[in-house]
Image (tube, rainbow, N blue to C red; front, side, top):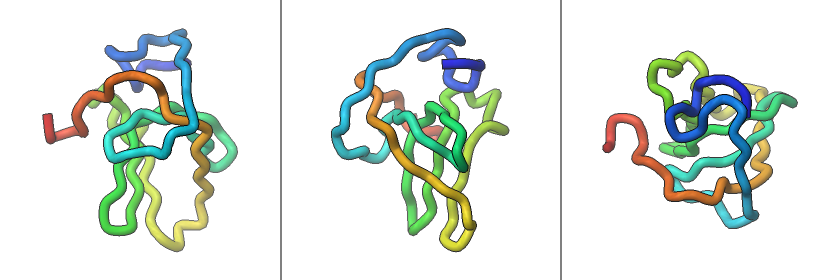
Length: 90
């Protein structure tokens, strides 16, 4: 992983392992977002998909998908670890 948006759980340069289990709310995943690859925490609420940075000081790196946004999203896999709580719920 590159960058600090997933610190302190995943420092810059970390390597993660994924499986192909279905994502559950709060899981960490590796995603393709508009052709780029990111590691984020998954949350879906009322038809909106949120990909959160664990480092809340980097909330600017969060990604939000609404219906009709025209953006592309695909999940490559679920990161194997015990996921931290969603922002504001822990």
